[in-house]
Length: 148
Image 1: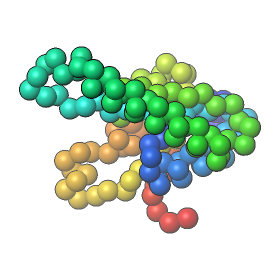
Image 2: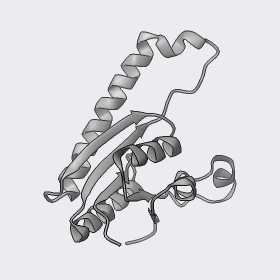
Image 3: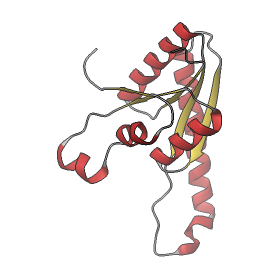
Image 4: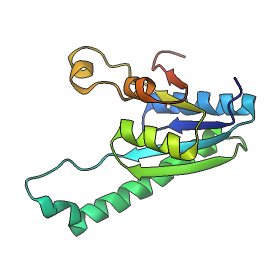
């Protein structure tokens, strides 16, 4: 396989850092370009249906988008080593956002970290990495959060 477009899904976590490092190492080996993706999860629905339009929501989103850009720049600074990088930030649920952006950008490989949660928490919430791997139309590399 020869991947030319690698999407790396990141958040502000240790497992995400590992995924970014490995994703950029693969991009270097394949001569691929990278898209760094950070999903901003929507605020849960409230009793007031107009809340989504409230100025406070827009302020929270603007701050999240600004934080997302800072995160993506920091990851690129640490790992890119000159590799062409596109920043993608969107408001969506994690699984849907990753799958949607991978398709729109034309990713040939998705790299994602996993928190390695198990038990009841995993049963109730599922795993974003697992859901992406099951539904993606391209290969998915899941980077575990285990020792170096």
